[in-house]
Amino acid sequence: QVQLVESGGGLVQAGGSLRISCTASKQMFWTSTMAWFRQGPGEERELVASSRPGNLASYADSVKGRFTISRVNDQNTIHLQMNKLKPEDTAIYYCAAKYIGALNFDFWGQGTQVTVSS
Image 1 (cartoon, rainbow, N blue to C red):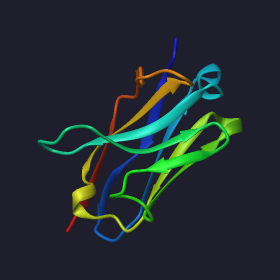
Image 2 (image 1 turned 180 degrees about the horizontal axis):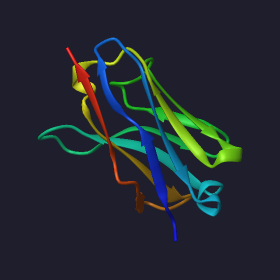
Image 3 (image 1 turned 45 degrees about the vertical axis):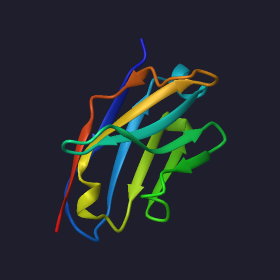
Image 4 (image 1 turned 90 degrees about the vertical axis):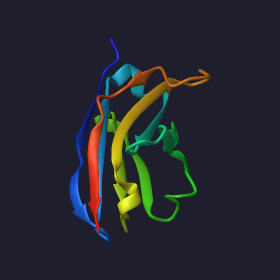
């Protein structure tokens, strides 16, 4: 059974930094695109950043230059380092995964709250 376990999150002031992490089952990790989505109050879920094996990363325009997604292969973990946080980054952040070649993200974590105060 595929499991995605998130950690981190919390409250931070605008301009500050925070890191959230997601650990996947080993079999899933090596053959998957891993990603972070977020959903703010009253908003739709949006893709924030994704990482394919080989550390090929992509980002939403709204977070480019501020957020960094990274893979730690020997820990089956991805991190999302968030710098220069803004109040509009406030959301529930979800870790997601899909096997290479799959159309949709089929596996999801439980979500972790990130709140940025002004």
